[in-house]
Length: 150
Image 1 (cartoon, rainbow, N blue to C red):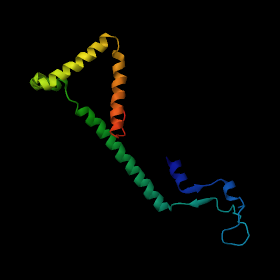
Image 2 (cartoon, helix red, strand yellow; image 1 turned 180 degrees about the vertical axis):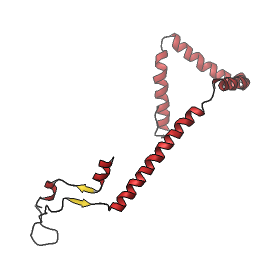
Image 3 (cartoon, rainbow, N blue to C red; image 1 turned 180 degrees about the horizontal axis):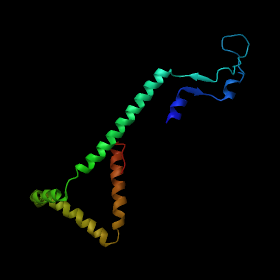
Image 4 (tube, rainbow, N blue to C red; image 1 turned 30 degrees about the horizontal axis):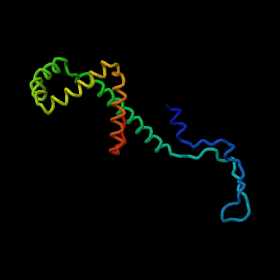
């Protein structure tokens, strides 16, 4: 970590980048060519005070992200819903589901679709239903100009 911050202080350039001659004349000047010197290898980016501020802010951000990750990890384990809650939900919602299925506007189309799926499986075409449904949904999404695919 200290090595990264130590390298952050300067722009490191290879010596070859500092000692080349330009093949083009200086813009707006006479027909002279520039030559760079090798005296200045590193250009200073930040003062020590600014570097310490950046380092402290970086450490604070790291600590905050770590604490947040630990907090999220503990909350996921603490808020798991017991299985018996799902069982109670299914029990109390069963009368509504039975009411929906007893409606002829839902029951007949549902039986027609389920009968077609059962017939396809009995003919051995069951494995084709997944890719066919995926392709149909993707064509529908494309025709609706939605940038989404399944």
